[in-house]
Image (tube, rainbow, N blue to C red; front, side, top):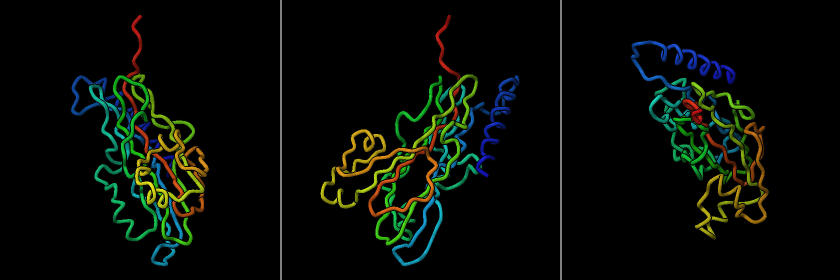
Length: 234
């Protein structure tokens, strides 16, 4: 199924080029949407003593492709279901023992170069709490090489990392120092503010990893394809 998402982009590119060549246009020509479901899968024992396993609805946010006259829509919807809901973490917290400390934050500089840029994805930071046994893994494709092309010379989206901070309890840290709640993948991995933490970065293909309370797992959705590369005139 994961590989099939690349077919969506291939069809979008072919149709966009055909549409661009038509004299009369009935809709905007746009570059491909972000086509991968970067997402957390999770499982373990809940705060209610139940054994569960599932994935987040955050996969339903995919940046839209750039248009001929403007940037794409940020985290608009999945390309396979434009009316899908992204989901609310507050509802999930009633049933499962982890928190999205950062949920659907659109961040800077996660796009490529082009006259018009693809819509940005969002960042997610999660941590388990109040569970005797829990773990996370991730699902993605295009984690090492981008599978989202641009249009008419525009760049495709970047590849996006998984970042983790093990050996800390973020909830204890925030309780003692509320100012540390200013979390972002960029800040945490560059400044490394939590003493004693083990900071690691990987491609976003994490196998199931057992999580201790308060350890941070960070990923991001990607951007849509870009429109036309900016080049110097001869």
